[in-house]
Image (cartoon, rainbow, N blue to C red; front, side, top):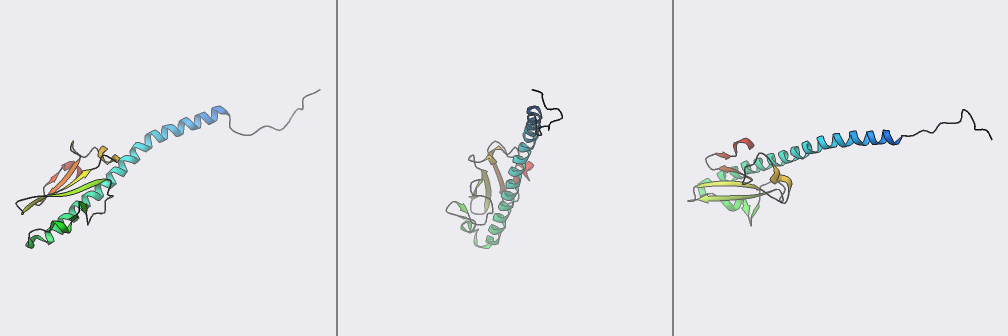
Length: 138
C-alpha cells in the first residue's frame, strides 16, 4: 500500500499556538483587572463625595431652623445619597447643635475599603466649616 501524496492538510491551532495565546491573554488580564477595579473604586468614591456635598447643601438649607438632620439621615440611611448602600455608610455628627461633621465610611463588605486614598479609618469627612479629610480624596 502506498501513501497518498499531496493529500489535504489539516487546519487549526497547534497546542503551542493555543498556549501562547492563553499566556498573552493572562498577562493582559493581570495588568488590566487591577486598573479596572481601582477605577471602579474611584468612581464610587466620587459619587460618595458628591453625596457628602449634597448632604451639606441640604443641611445648610435648614440652617435657620437649627439644622434638620432628619432631612438627610433617616433611620440610619441617607435620604439624598446616590451611592450604593453597601459601599458607604453615611452619618452626621453634631456638636452643640451648631457645628456638624458629615462622614462617609467605606464598608468592609466591598472592595471600597481597599481604596488607597482613604486613611486607616476608611472615612471621608466634611465639616460645617468646609474642612475635608483626607485631602488626597478631594
